[in-house]
Length: 231
Image (cartoon, rainbow, N blue to C red; front, side, top):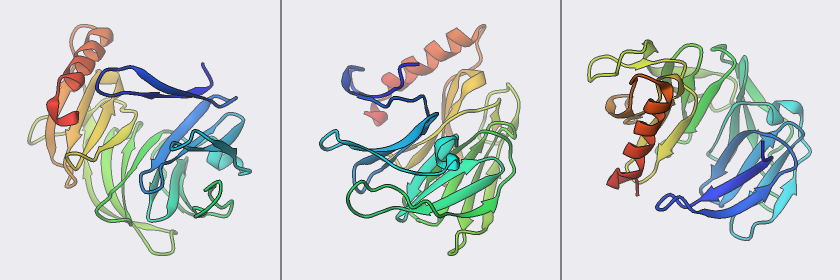
């Protein structure tokens, strides 16, 4: 509701910088190679140069603004707006805005999908589906018009994940831990955060499904801020 993006110090939780957007943000991703942040939302799309704080407006069609999952890989912005994944080339100078023209392919797995790039392979994407409650690795073809599935993990259940069975319950949000080369899946409705390697093998879970959702969220946050491997 603040219509802003806030940078937070992961070590102590302090606010570093606030970027006022002028619209409600729906999606956000960062290009680690250039230090540019890409944010789309209810009334626009902006790039933010994190080295100097400058923001630029990008004139783009609504699919860029209203998607719920995006990531940068191999010089492209990938984003999901049901029922398709889109790919747009990024400008390499100035505002670094994406090109308005896109390639796309069908990926009908519900309204909300978290996307994350595989830094070890620019053609590989990881996708976490809210409605399907599963995590998938895929390889996008060179033309950006199709994909092949590498593996799928997960089904819908409040049961805790184990080494042999993966469960999500309407998850929302997928991230990448660059320090440890692993995926971070936010299992929203179970109040948990699950960690996987690049083969989709489960490593650990923070939080879980205690008596209330608030208790689960508290446990997950406490586990994350005390995990030395994430700092």
